[in-house]
Image (cartoon, rainbow, N blue to C red; front, side, top):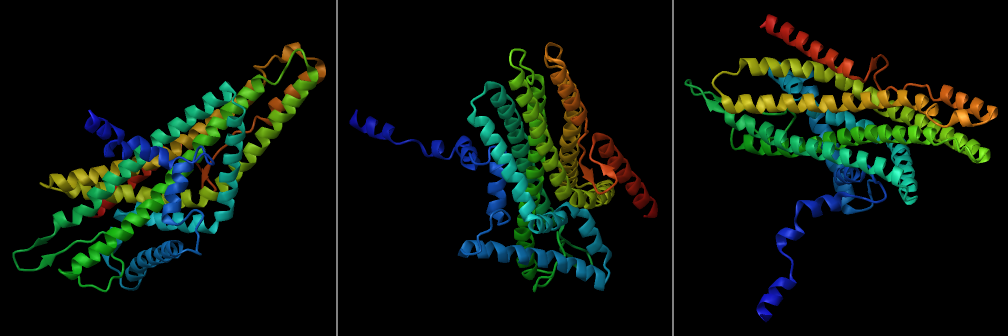
Length: 405
């Protein structure tokens, strides 16, 4: 019995390392919505970089090494044009977008801090009230946020695994004795293109590729999470509008209307700031992904009697489509939810209010009519309609490439 008790005294190692404990570790009460995403960006050195520590300086150096490596591929392709090198860039364009996203994130770091701190302060104030109506909406959209984010993280992990193992499956020695050793990125490395130098080169490509992938996944899921936040807060705005009128207290009704208007205008202000942060990146992404999907479809069509490569290529295309769909789906949700705010003002008990309050409700309805739209560049609205248009453009690019072969 004493032995049994001593065994029971210590928890199992599997309990300590359970998925639930890992997910709890990723949460941050200071940032209810985006805690896991900030921890991932902090792990890569993009969020709250501490250059005073050895690890912080190492992450910063690694960031510049990664950018230099990828830029060397563009320079090599520009100085001495190589069709295979250009094909690699187009084929793995989503990885290259990681450089763009991380550079823009660093450039606009202060504005990203403003948006994220605003989100944090709003959610913490709402949760501190212990109001069930607030809590239900917030917990519902945070739960949805986690499902989407962790699904995308898992998808990116398996997609990376298939991508970085694909070249080894295609390596071969032809009948005439020439060797074919494929790469993922054609950046500069001080090693030969054949073994053993090839394997050192692939090791560098794999490590830096995973770093860029972390930049991409961190930025993408952060952006999607902020869109989910705005959708949730618009629902809370609708709730404020419905509860604005207190039939028994006109002073409180006036304060509620003023509070609702103030909350809404601040929310709109930060959606504009957020749109300015993502718009140029999303425009570049729109162009790149349209070309990338066309190139990948051509690659898939040309695959014969190679099931492993076919599966990994299809998985990569599916991952790209899901990545694109997440942006446009949740941006579209913000747009749709913003149309309900003005209607919600007239779902309040405004008929029971006096004429002055009725006029204020009418003004609130007019000032909340604005439809919130996120844009990819100056012309392209991020919506499901645009998503379908991108798929059509990718197919058109595929038919163009296919006809020129």
